[in-house]
Each structure stands twice: as C-alpha cells, then as structure tokens.
Amino acid sequence: MIRLIIIFLFLIVFFFIGLFINGVMYISCKGKDEKRYRISNPIASFVFQTVLCISGVRKKVMGRENIPDEIVLFVSNHRGFFDIISTDTVIKQPVGYVAKS
Image (tube, rainbow, N blue to C red):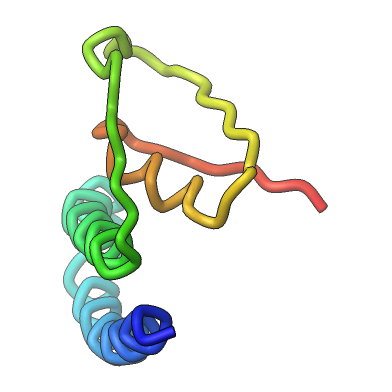
C-alpha cells in the first residue's frame, strides 16, 4: 500500500512538472517533431523506470541483441499492468501502442 501511495505522489508531482516541460517544448519545438521526440522520450523513460523501481518490479531481458534495427511489431498479451511501462524501458527504438476495447 505504501508503494502505491509513493507512486501516486510521484505521478502527481511529475504531472505538474510535466505541464511546465510540455509548455516549454510547445513554444521551443513548434513544428519540430523529431526534436520534441528526442527531448520527451528520455523523460518518459525516466518516469517509467522510476515507477517500475518504486513498484518493486524486477525485469530480466533476454535476446535484446536479436531485435533488428528496422521496423518491428511487438505483441503483448496484456496479462499485467506493466506491459507498456516495461516494454518502453526495454526497447530503445521509437515505440507506438495500439489498444482495443
């Protein structure tokens, strides 16, 4: 229960910091999607790593060297709450997600 409270507090604090960061990026990177991605991706990765650390999730990555440098489709079974968070921290390529109802 204490971990959940710490995660909520972290996310609330980061929400307000994120509003400021997004405002600055909107002004400085208007029309420059590549620059905005290079700035926002490490920030999101940091937040996801922190949430995983606070939650006590341990991950073991095997076969990362087998991922090619081209476009790849990763399929998750969504058996847990940390699928998106864990895949984003492991995969170093640009990642997009599709959800269904």
